[in-house]
Image (cartoon, rainbow, N blue to C red; front, side, top):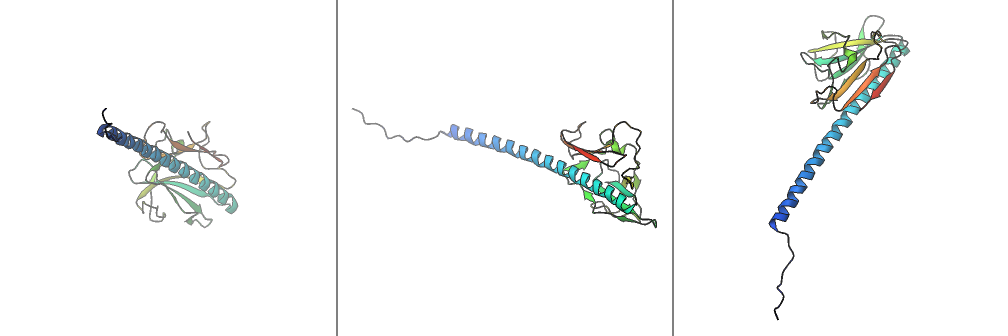
Length: 199
């Protein structure tokens, strides 16, 4: 009668390598998914902040009976605005910032293409002058396009179109048409009411 061999259960080298490879693949997929969720949250937060700021500026224009200019600022020569300023125009002709400027993160930009951000289609960019406020992250060397939120809830935007103008926030590295992930603020030029749309 043979005595049973003293064997210990163990994993072979190939089984260990396959397990490590599976763990690495799953970790990589989780990191990509987390980055996509983080970017999506940043885009949604930027859209919501801008929507809230537009509503506050429209209310200030009505409460003070003075126009408030919404400026979309971009670095000179850039396509996409990265800063939104709200400038109160006083009765004596002076101007002052109404609230802190909104600055997009490195991951999020305002889509400067007029086929996406239709709000920009009727606006012309001009260089900032010495009397213009500094744009956060851009200093004094920037261009801006703007329109007015007027007392009574109306805007200076053209209302010839059958659709309300839209301002689109997207990922900085997504130039698809339309972008895969975006936040679009639709602004009614007659009432200054806004709606936020997400895919």
